[in-house]
Image 1 (cartoon, helix red, strand yellow):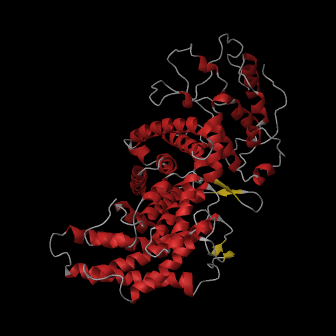
Image 2: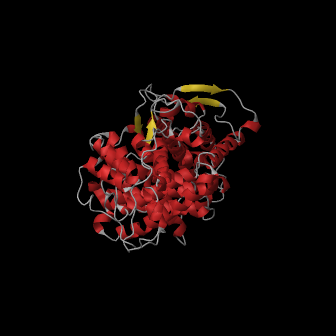
Length: 563
């Protein structure tokens, strides 16, 4: 039986919950009132096709204008396997098949590559492609499983990942804007996406839905994500051996997606190292690509993503040094806007401090050489001048176009509520777009890290036995750092926002200048990211016992915590 009647017009989530949907477009109001993310509506043609019989295949071949060999086929059709049903060790030759849904989209004219919607249509059809075995094993029963049933989980994961990380809805006009990974639709809309990118995308999208939905979905989605992850890693090892593939956009995109996978799935201390290793590889690839890597919009976006990720963890206490990061900073500093130039100059100062102090620690004798002292004094002077610019921007002479709009003022909260409340006592800032919120957030955390750099230089110059907490400069920096810590606690709306605020939240929570209530609130937000938003790496941050700048200063003196 092919036609099962008129399909339900409800959204996918309402049908899954078996409740009546109000069918409001583009997102149903029942999902919105229940504070759920509406995944949208199913294609009505796809919903009516339940079995790929000979008549069905002939009908779609006729619709497509392809009748070659259709009438002479006598054997039952070999339905393609999905990679979710295969092990990552399958060595059979693979061919790509387009689903009936993709055929209908092309027939209706939705394959125009110049429109943004076509990228999403192609993305959905690509996620519904699968691998078929060519070893002559025609006796396997699962080869006749309808494609719509096999790929249901991958389709859901694709839609969910796009909703949470790629396309962020706007209030005005209900038009989507690009999120943190704007290059994903372009690469997935290709007829044959690179294997390394496709596997990384599937692994990450399945991981995103596995860490967010209920227990009935977690097991199958997570195991499928792990299989695709293994395939992606193997494909990555092959790609980096090829000089051409190592510089391709899709290979770099795959590395960035694998880094996101680490933050979503694993919560061990090793996951942070794996994440950093992925970002080190991305930084090396960006440097290898050079100016050619910025020739396209996707290349520029991936460059910015790589730099922002490395900028995030390079500001952490005792963070590892990445030599390629110096190139990343120097490469774009002259072309950035004023705000970005401030943040990049701040990170360059921190890189200089780490380099000078590391050489001083490695010296077996005379580690306070006059040249080293002079170099530290020069860095301290630059850091103080830059900190004064940050202070004018954020505190004393705030430009009207930079002022953070206060949406709400929270007078106070009981201590018992700090672990779970969405906002901390004080001003709650509101921004029209996520991009503006991200820029302010990164500026706040950069200012906080700059106060750490100033105190590290001052403590080193004071000597190993001196109390670096004494003096007016420490009190001044402590007051400034305290204001930045108070500005950093925010409640993410989309999971991409949680990914963005993860490192700033951690940086503020481990600051020596965070008050007890502020630290408790920040740790509560990290716990929210781990338990509710599904960013499990936040749980690792909760278990880490580090302090800044205390640990940095102890390390500069030859002891302390190391990654």
